[in-house]
Length: 305
Image 1: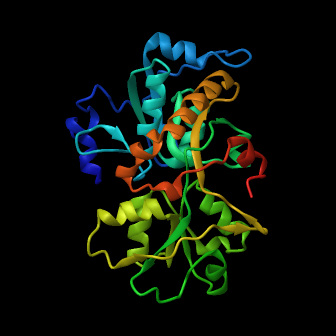
Image 2: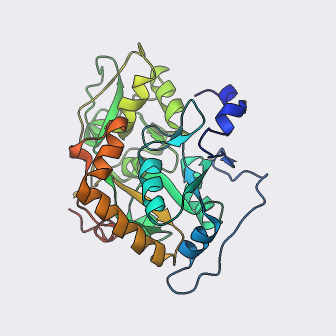
């Protein structure tokens, strides 16, 4: 997706009543947004009641295939939005308003009241759990490296990046950025990109030796770039300080909104048990291998291993 496509009316408003109401760029919240609604809450929060009354939920997403993106018809789609929309319909909310953000702006935007939920396939980590409420994960995806064709540096995982003194590309605010630092990659060899597309361009241009994302994300992105001269390495589970780092993503709500998280988890579990989740995400490249039995509590407390 190029910058010119952002100005097209068809991109901004889709055929299903979903509008793109906010753009957040460069790691900062857009200055033109004046509608901020954060309820006082109370124990358990009251977001679910308010969403049922309004009939609309504002979904923050980061335009990263296959997790959440705007399609050619201007509709919000991808793994997380499709699962989120199905769950919210079960909860009595039928209208969805997409809110585009840089990945690093999703949690600040949620906390500021610009979104009702983050629907971006965000990994559940203890650090993020300290800031927002997470639902149980809806997928668990292994990582992979995007490499120049032929893998000239023979890179395969984080340890190989350290050993080969390679430059690793990561997205700003991503868990991969933290992983690279924790395993000992110097700051000067951690190349931070604002989004998936610029990260791919960075590897192609030689600004980074690899780009670390999920296999799903890289497969989806390369599908849009035939003849890129790039390849995807074998999948792996990152290991940091002797602990496996599971790439399990969920939906984020503001702190204190435990009532909607509880109801969301109940409907999500029913969809997982029936196979509805797998059927919904297969068009985006997910398989049974990416389904998960992990819980947010395990991931938030670091006891998933």
